[in-house]
Image (cartoon, rainbow, N blue to C red):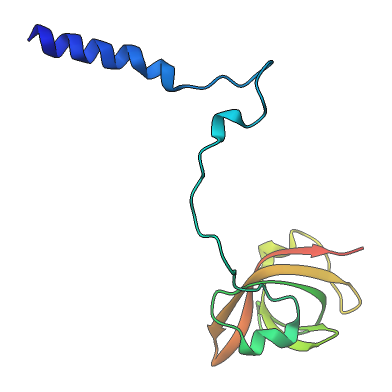
Length: 130
C-alpha cells in the first residue's frame, strides 16, 4: 500500500515539470516545437468564380465577389460576377440589417450545396465591398 501511495505521489510531483514557461528569456514558440499533426499536401481549391460552382463537389468552400441580380424565392437569389451567374441561398440573418441592391458589390463566403435539382452556394457570411 505504501508503494502505491509513494508512486502516486511521485507522479503528481512530476506533472508540473511537463509545463513550459513562455516569457522573458525564452524564444517565442519554444514550448511548441513538437509537430502539431494534420494533413500536409494538396488542398481542394476554393471556388472564387460563379462559373466554377456548376462543376464543383458538394461542400466545396467558396468566396465570391459580385452582386445579387434577382430574388428567386424567400432565400434564393441569382448571383453574378465577371465569369457568369449562379444561384445562392442567403438567409435573412446573413444580411445583418444591410440593404443590398443589384448595384451593390458584395462578397459572399459559403459552400456548394446540391439543392433543388442543381448546385447552389449556401452562404455563411455576406459583406458589402466598398
